[in-house]
Length: 136
Ligand code: ZN
Image (spheres, rainbow, N blue to C red):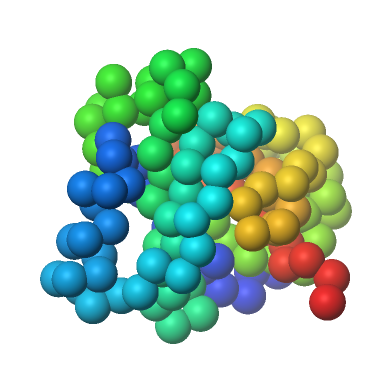
């Protein structure tokens, strides 16, 4: 695995409209993108902190894994996402090392990234996402 940097930190929130003002007015960050990912039943808001992003995740359905996370644990840090060259190869590589995968193959996430999640049972309980930048 070749991690270049932390791509983003995913944070579960109940309501983007309540969370965004904290990041903008208190932390002084700028929300540069709001995007709905229908696939994952979430609405996301992004802020840049150096080359790392903060990704706020608001559930758009009770069925969303984010809704279930908030119901169980409350709002807070949901996952950490590492940037790698190639998500498909990295998923194969870690599976061979015995890591349990949530995604057997890469899928499309917010911001056109290719993403894949590793299961928290194999990652010291931290939900871990691998991200690959879109081709330029
Ligand atoms: Zn993410």
